[in-house]
Image 1 (cartoon, rainbow, N blue to C red):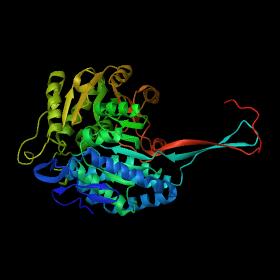
Image 2 (image 1 turned 90 degrees about the vertical axis):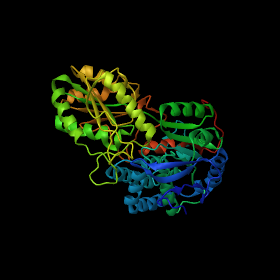
Image 3 (image 1 turned 120 degrees about the vertical axis):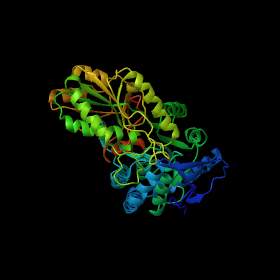
Length: 498
């Protein structure tokens, strides 16, 4: 078995129940984003042929896994839940070491993965169809759920435990076999997840792991005719291309992509509550999540009070190595992401008023990492670049409006539609906001971030395409519905509509 916690691990693929070294000679290093002197992993960029081998293993394992009674599949997931709980601290520390987020954020992510696995294990006894009344005498009709077959999971680096789990767990419960391609920036978390399922008793070939680039291994998952479904989380550019390619091959495709999520703060809101929630939504996980709060749309009459308190708290936000006690925010995941954030900050200096942050952090505590200070811009126009484009970093734009109607218009002015929230005590405006906000998820008097294991996750507009993830919606994606008609008249039917 591979050891996913030793220093500078040479990562391995997991194919047909065995940990195997890639045949690729292309190896990239993954360094700790808080301390780039530390090499935490060496990742092979696996070949297309290795991905084909993983797909073939999943195809061969599918018949037996499909035939296993669903409650027995659920028992394996319950064991995985227990193992994940027992290894929670170690898994969270591993996550922080390679991704950078604070330990408290990593612990929260692992707990969400535990909750999802537990929920999906229970769903193994609830893969229900429905019985339907026939319009014909002595006829019975009903539906059953059946697995798709081999499914692929392509996952990002920002939630390297929770997102893979919320794809893998429902796929397995439904009777599918899985080929998992994680982001190359977070290979150790991916290996540990697979190890846990392996320890839980998953048969060989049911879950396979292949490291590598999207262009080489990811494209094979989309194009291979043995793969019948694919779940992707990542950028809009990649997701749109993947969805189009999958559609040409009549694959079932699910893509979760970007977000530019607003918090709307009305004049009657609890400003302290709104400020604390905005702070956490904008800067926790270094702003590197698709549901992060990146815009505050606030009524002018309370904007000065809100912004001054927000900036005061943002300046006290503790930035550092996520494994150190008391740290609120870690580094950007890598140098490229840090440079993207810094680029948008420079754009923001021309589009708004910089109130705090706005630079790379320097000094003995920061010089070996990719740290950017929590940044707040005020007086930002809703059509400006920093208010329209996803930055994926600790940058918050404040947009001032005159009234609720302007607030709703500003909130809806972006191409994304993942999450949103409103802070108000006016029930009329709250319900109108819920009706008219163009997002797949919305929160009332709580942050744009967060979700629950049994509740669907997904967005509108350019944020998502395909069925929702998580909860019962995930079961819908990972199964096909078969309709069954039983005629017990014992004689030829005289006529039929079809």
